[in-house]
Amino acid sequence: MSDFCLKGENVHLWRGDHHVLRGVRFQVGAGECLQLTGANGTGKTTLLRTACGLAYPEGGEITWCGESIRKDLPAFHAQLAYLGHEPPLKAELTARENLGYWVGVRRRLEQQEVNQALERVGGDHWADRPVRTLSAGQKRRAALAGLTLMRVPLWMLDEPTTNLDAEGQKLVGLLIDEHLQAGGVALAAVHHELAVSAPHALRRMELTLE
Image (cartoon, rainbow, N blue to C red; front, side, top):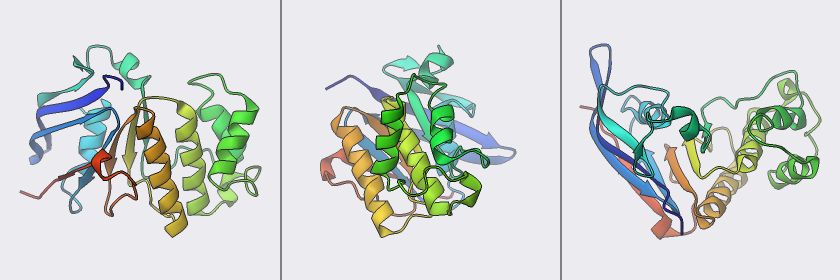
C-alpha cells in the first residue's frame, strides 16, 4: 500500500464575516474515501476547494504525503482530479473529443483508452454527440469517464452522483471502489451515502452549522 495521505489540521476559513470552516481536522489515507456530509451551507464544497488548494484558509494547514500543499501547488495539482457540480465539458465538442482535450492536457492518451472509458460508463451510443445535446446524467457519466482516465492518486468529488439514476449511483460506487483498491485516496462531499462496497474503506465526517 502506498503512503498517500491527505490531512487537514485546524483549518479556518472565513467568507466575509461568516466563519465557514472552524478548526476543521481530517485525515484520509491510501485505500480510503472520506465522505463529507452536512446541510447546505456547512462548508462541504468550501472544504473540498480548500483541500484542492483553490481556496486559501486563514488558519491551519492542508498537507499531502506530509508536505504542505502550498510548498509546490502545481506538483500537488498534478496528482489530483477534481470533479465539481458542473462537469468540465465543452458544449460544442462531443463527449469523446472532450475527454481527448480534458485528459489529454494531463497525459498522453490512446484512443482505445478513451473508447473503453466511455463504454465503461455506458456512453457507447452518445460518445460522438455534441455535449450540448446530452442529458445531465449523460454529461455526468462522461465526466466520470474522464476521472478514470486521469490516473492520479487523489480524487476530489463534489456530489459525484448528481443527476444520476440508481444504476449511475452504483457505477460511482464501483469506480470509487476500484480507485481505492488500487491504493488511491478520495474525498467526497455528498448528500447521500456513497455505494462503496467495502465498509472499512469509507470514513465519514459531518460538518455542522454554527
